[in-house]
Image (cartoon, rainbow, N blue to C red; front, side, top):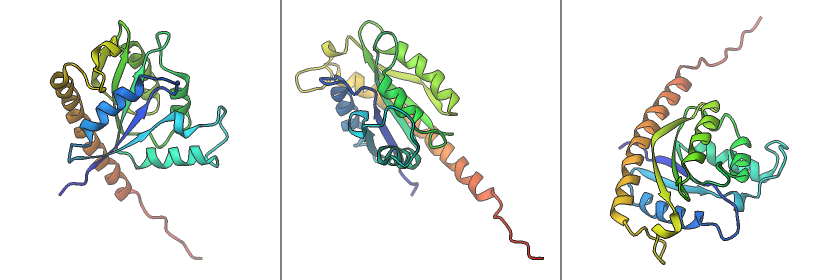
Length: 197
């Protein structure tokens, strides 16, 4: 049986009263029903990353590196603030580098008229620099608070769940393919030899 895909779901906001909790809770409830996935979350509000880069000796950065390295794929749940993504999300992204490399990432976005898509387009440029493969399809919520009920579920629950599952099917394909390639690269790396005189 093939190993499950380790998926890290990343909160794109750390603001008090954020709507991100609603969207992440909806998404993770669905994702955790998928037998092909093991799901964890990364929340900048909980990580409390330092505001300047001080290396991985900081416990929050060390923990972030471990979680990102263990993940086979990522989903970023991002709002759009002032036509872009948040500073807290950029801080989280920039606190790591090799841990992101050659892995796939998908987006769930939310916002006003644009549904967060302007933030997604900017994030694609950032992740391209880190050698991350981003999925073409996005699950996007326009005027998001109007689309969810008082229990935190979309009014169009079936349509939203189908959109998420379709995007994740592509994400899983990339995750398994790239994991296999990374494992093959490691297997092909020659073991250093000790030469005695």
